[in-house]
Length: 316
Image 1 (spheres, helix red, strand yellow):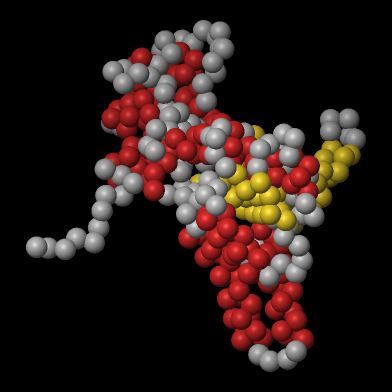
Image 2 (cartoon, rainbow, N blue to C red; image 1 turned 30 degrees about the horizontal axis):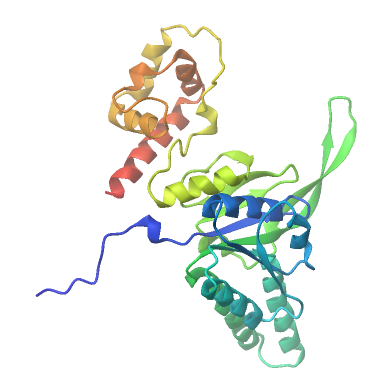
C-alpha cells in the first residue's frame, strides 16, 4: 500500500499570529483586547503577557482577561515559559504587550557581549539565537497570539487653511527586528486617531482598508478561518454608498460593460463573494449607485475582482 504523508489543507487548523504596531498612545492595547475578544468569542479565554509596568490592569474593568506581568530583565525564558503556561492552561489567545521589549532586551544583551570583547558577528549569533527561541515559541504555539509593537516616533507639522500650524505624532517602523512582518499572518499599523491599516495581510480581507479595530475585526478573522468570511476584500474606492439618493444615468450600464469586457465570470464571482449581488444575479443587477462607485476607479475594481477569482480557483 502506498503511504501518503499529506492531508487536505484546512484553514480552521491554523492558529493566527497577528501583530499591531503603533506609536505610544495609538491604542494598541485596546485594539488587541477587542480583536482578541472577537476572535475567541464571548466565552473564550484571553491572557496578556504584560511588560508595560502592569498597564494592562487599567483595562480590567472593560475587558475580561488574565495577566502575567513580566518584569525586567526580559530574558527569553520568561516569555517562553509564559507562552507554555498559556497553552497548558488552555487559553485561546495570548496578547504580548509589548513584544518590542523582547527585541530591546536582545539588543541590550548583544551590547553587553560586545563590551566583554569577542567577535561582533559571533556575539550577534548568540543574541539572535535567543530571539529566535522566543519567536519560535510564538509561531509554534497552539493558540492565537497578538503581538503589540511600539513604533519609532516622528513629528509632522500640519498647516490648516488659515495657516495655523499644529504638530502631529506619527509612527514609523516598529521597534523590532527588520522583516519581522513576514512572520505574521496579519499586521495592523495604528495611527494616533486609532485607525488601522493592514501593512501585511495574508487573509486579503483588510488590504487597503482604513478602519478602527473592533470585536467585529476578530469575528471576521474567525469566520475566515472556517471559510465563512463574507463581504471581504472590498476595495475602499468601490465601497457601496448605502444611502445614496443620486440618480445615475442608465447609460452607465454600457460603461460598466466596457470595463468588465471579457471578465464577466470574474466580476460576477467577486460581486457575489462581496455580497453586492445574490448568487443567482450578475453584474447587470447592480444598483445605479453601486455602478457609479465602480466607475469612479474601474481599474482597481477589475484588479480586485480578477485577484479574488484567481485566489478562489487556486484554493480548490
